[in-house]
Amino acid sequence: MEETKKKRFSLIIPVLHEGARINFLLETLRHLPLGEKAEIIVVDGCPLGDTVKTIDDKNVKKVLAPPGRAKQMNIGANQATGEILLFLHADTRLPPEALTLIAETLENKNIVGGAFDLAFEGNNPFLQFLAILTSLRARLTRIPYGDQVIFLRKDTFFALGGYPDVPVLEEVILMERLKRHGLKIALIARKVVTSPRKWEKNGFLVTTFHHRILMFGHYMGIPPQRLVNLIPRPIKDKVLIFFVKSPTLCPVKTRLAKAIGTEQAKLLYLAFLKDLWEMISQNGPERGWDVRVYIYPQAAVEEMAAFFAGHASFHPQEGKDLGERMSNAFLASFAAGYRRALLIGSDTPDLTAATIELGFTALKKKGATVGPTYDGGYYLIGFKKRSFSPHFFAGIPWSTAEVLKITLERFRERGISPFILPHFNDIDTIEDILALREQHRESLFSRGYTMNSLESIERLFKGGN
Image (cartoon, rainbow, N blue to C red; front, side, top):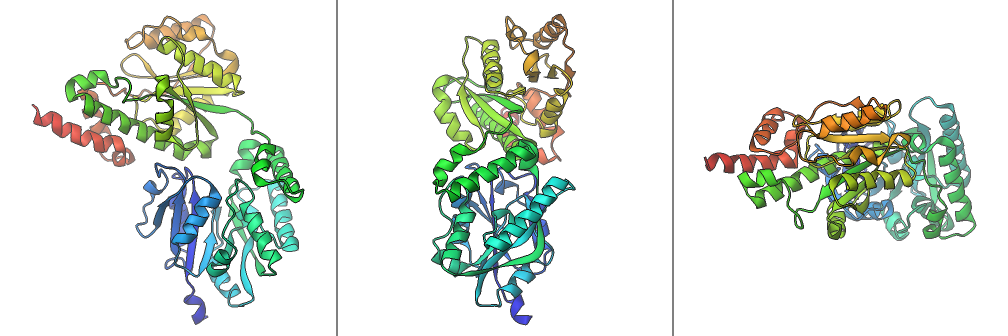
């Protein structure tokens, strides 16, 4: 057992927009026996690094990589110093004795790696039965899935060429390589527990069918690059429409720019975008939001798509005024099959995921929802597909204190009683800046891009007075 304690582990965690859960996962890993001394490598597939920026553990190795789980895991393995590599999905928990069991298993020099039995969070009988079948299948075929937490000796991993750079089934293909080379793995009779979130989002039957199609196509010899096209598209329920501008091609924060200067206004607007995008990226996948970013002007779509990247689609804002552009974005989103749509702008950087989710929840019963601002406008508006009409955006005097009042009148004309969300403040003036700084001085928002930008602007403003 003394030899067991000397084993070196590198725990490699590929992530994409997992800021909401990563610190809890890392804390549980550190409390595992042998976990305190393990090397933990988090490989973030988001160019902005939205997950690694949230990590509190200073001993975690944080790596940015192109998105794609195979790429991320290979890059993490290349950074690893441990002799045992363990590949862990961010939504999966190890049993308390996991590392000790792995170390003991690999004392047998004939075994090069392995995995665990599987369980799902919660008590859904369908998923628990599926987990039993998955574990049994892995024992019979010696080809576990990635959800079962694959571990390998590092020299074996690199001798096999690492994970194949394919969009799906990279872990299955690697395990098949092991089997063809006559290398032995062990299936440890302890359960890892994984999240059912993809099953809950896409539906149990659809997700099961998807897995069966992938495996059948794989055994029929269809390349993984083509298998992706066989995956059934998930149910389109919730879409978040994010309206943004390019600060390099059009004026932004014009009222603030008169007080703090055009360049400072641009920098502040970029900070707003980064904070909002970080919130969306960290919460959207977990909460089942699809995201469509609408960009103004049209010439800036490529530039701004590169700025955001990540889990979204990017589109030009189309229309002769703001109302027509918003109306067209809703029409396009509903035409794409979504049933509930919310639209937000970029003037409320402290907008919370909980507020957005409240809006989506409200649309289960209400035809519309609106989030008012204190200056007479709104920061969010949303509709059920059957309740939407371009009439709600036609002829509105935008950027005035009458916007919300007229919009609510339009709802009443159509017999719609919208759900009213909590008020937020648009950040348009120096007074708004100072109020935002004071409101969030001790909150988590104080660690964000906007607050850092406000500190320099506040110093500039006070110094000039």
